[in-house]
Image (cartoon, rainbow, N blue to C red; front, side, top):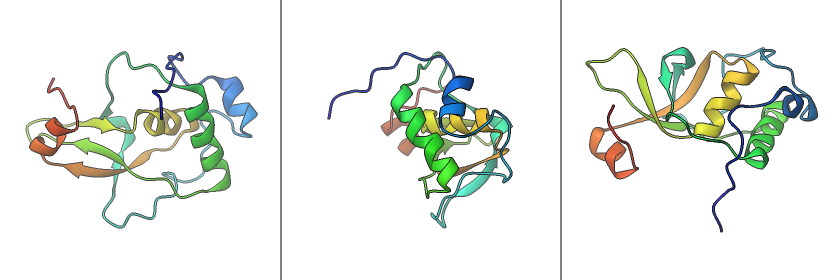
Length: 124
């Protein structure tokens, strides 16, 4: 499978509308996730990778999943005990869609620093 073409800086309102959703209209705290090891972390404390662009098709699939209440996997995050935030390791599209739709929590699997580094994490 080839790499996704990344062209968007944000989740556009027109894409939300195409998927039958409205910005900020979420009625639950988080998207549907069946992973019992995932923690629901405050989305306001999540830091994503700076400058990462998004793929429109991937966003549309996630937003349609929100509308259909499909089960989606948790994102990967790292938490340094010396900071009050979580660093997103994998799941930028799910995070950005969750922000746009208005979820207040994000299903996350917290990983250790060695696991985060192996997954491509660059400490801030």
